[in-house]
Length: 227
Image 1 (cartoon, one colour):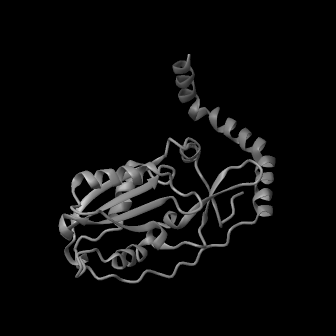
Image 2: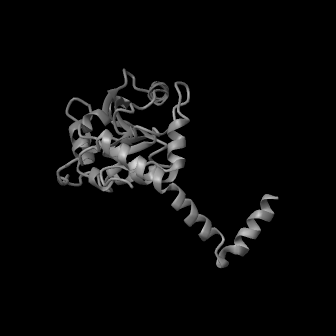
Image 3: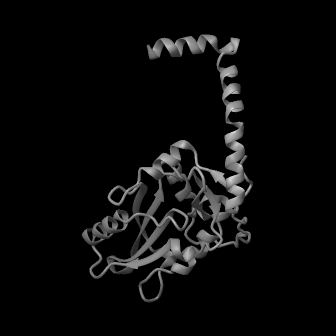
């Protein structure tokens, strides 16, 4: 019995989370270089506040980007809860290459950024804006998103959502972020106990569906394939 204030990770996404270790980060990384265009500042940098404002105005379309991982008290199952301390500044980070800002320096920076695991106390994504390429004419974006949030295809779609088709698009303010209250330990424990109690009934229902007349052919094929 899940509360409206949290969602349980799917078994596959929980497996991605569990597979992560100190030397095996499980995030998806991407990087690309673009012309600075109207984002360039007078001193040759990048207007990072404009970038942050643009992304913040679109985050309501991808709520997972403002949720963090928590755990249930009994079975230690990972769940998604709204991050009440969410700050876009923590996730959209600003960096710069030393002169001359060439491709080798950028590759080394990408390697260092992608080698670091994401902080599980926050939503599991980062976007690094890197200035200093080719005397300020270009900049790079380095994206990190944990595999438990997205797969390779949808991460590209989400990154596209956080961009604009035109360089001079106006930034409209998004709706205010009102995080849902986190469930208490007692509420999570109650839900788990109810789940334990209902497990035999759920299993019986699954067996009835499995042996239903309309699925016997499918079941027989599966058993023959396993044999």
